[in-house]
Length: 275
Picture (cartoon, rainbow, N blue to C red):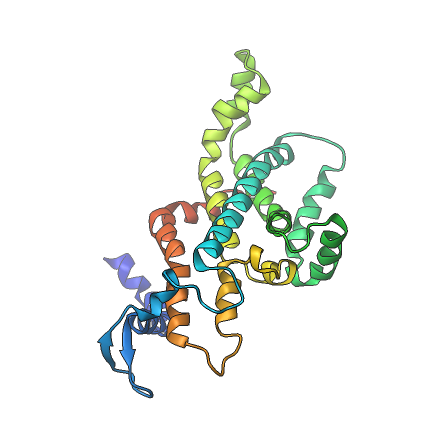
C-alpha cells in the first residue's frame, strides 16, 4: 500500500495525458456503429453502414479490403519471420564469436538503426528500379526487412550477452556440437527476446505506410495503411465515419496482439545491458 501511495502522482500524470487519447478512441468506436445528425455529438441510431467496405467494393482506386488485408498480413508476417531468423543467428555471432571487423559491424548496426527511413528513400527507389522490384510487394518486403534488421540484431545480441558462457562450455565438453548447443541450450534462454522481436517486427510491418506508398504505388501491392489514405485523398467528399470504421478494422489485430502478448512485449527491455 505504501508503494502504491508513492506512485500515485505518476499514475495521475499518466492518466491525465492518456485521457484525450481514450476519449478519441471511444468516439471512434461509437461513430463507427452509429448515425449522427450534422453538427451533433449525440448518436441518433445504430448502423452497420459504415462497415460496408467489408462486403462492398469501394471506389478508392485500390484493391478490395480483403485483398489489401491479405497483402498487409503477408507483408508483416514475412518481414517478421525473416528479421527474426537473421537476428537470431547474426546476434549470436556478434555476441559469441571473435572475427575480423567485429567492432565495425557493431558500430554499423547503431549507425544504420539511427538513419531515418525517409533519408534513404530516393536511393532505395533507384535500387528497386534497377533490380526490377519497384511496384512489387516483394520489393517492399525486402526493404522493410533490411531496415528492421539492425534493431533486431542489436536486441538479440543483448539477450545472448546475458546467457552465461558456462552453459555452452558444459555442452561442448559433453561432446555436443556448437550448433546443437546453440539450439538446445542457448536458444531457450533467449526465447523472450525471440518472441519480442517477432511481435515488434510484425507490428512494425502491419503499421508501415511510407514504404508501400512510395515504392509500390500500384493497386496490386497496396496495404491497409495506403487503403485508408485513399479514403480521404479527396477530403471534400470523404466519409469520415467510414474512415473511422476502416481504422477500427485496421487497429483490431494490433489490439488483440497487444492484449495477448503484452508481457512478452515488455521483455524486449529486459535483455542486453552489455554492449
